[in-house]
Image 1 (cartoon, rainbow, N blue to C red):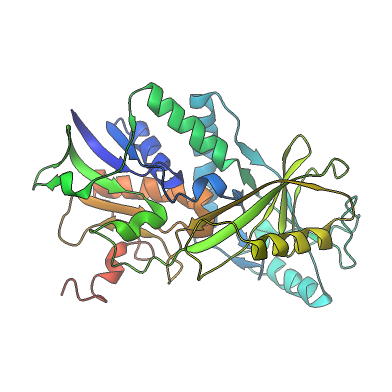
Image 2: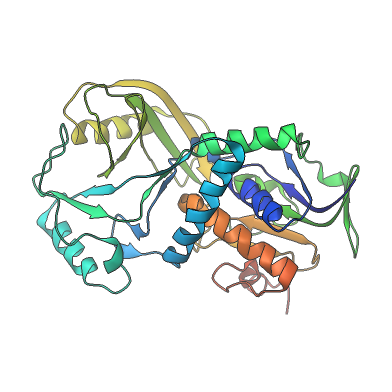
Length: 353
């Protein structure tokens, strides 16, 4: 079977690549072994500023604008709802945080996204002595629903194969790549943390960050927004909330830990004053890079072998945006921004002169 693209990995990155292929009328097959993906356990929150320090995010408005087209388009295709626009209220812990907020409200890169008028009305069951700051252009993607719905759609259309990818079966030629019965013009690896098992890219500084979160039922909260304090709390319907997330730079397993659960419970109980019930606890490894920039582009020797990885904690916005950048680079020869181009490491690692 001949296709334009073989895509390896069916998480947020791989599915974003599949959809931009569909947009550009490029044929593809997606291979998925279902291992080590962080997409199904992601919080899914998106926003245009760093909520800890109130600083700007690289090309945030362009990413937001692209997501605003991309996700509703996929909702129409799949007949599902998973893209939810909700305000985020940042709970302030001190006067100093308030002052930093006001400084950010005057900064040209962040002013458009922050409400300079503090929210002084208390949110029921969430008390704050120093009030809240409202962030604009925010919400969350139900990543699990998006991933499962898109995978189901591709399965029904015979475009997704669930199997372990065997690198020994991949043959790279000058004009094509061949894998089992598939011949493609190029192959894109979007494997997340499993990239460390990929012989074409495993030397790159992918430094996965483990995250854990809780699903809790809180019947009395009736929250209609996302609230961010030491933890975030996201209403996902039927009195269910996501509470997250932890960051562990040393543990590279998907094992649930009592330490992370305790940390999340402590943060939740400091935030709300009503009863709750824990209904699930999940963990995954985020594909983060040491310089906190994505890894996008071609292999230094094989120009038809590509990488789409390193989305980190901002995959909801970065996934579609970077997939589009990559396909524009491949199909239309549009240069990749040096901030995301994997080639930034080739000289450092002395792989090219």
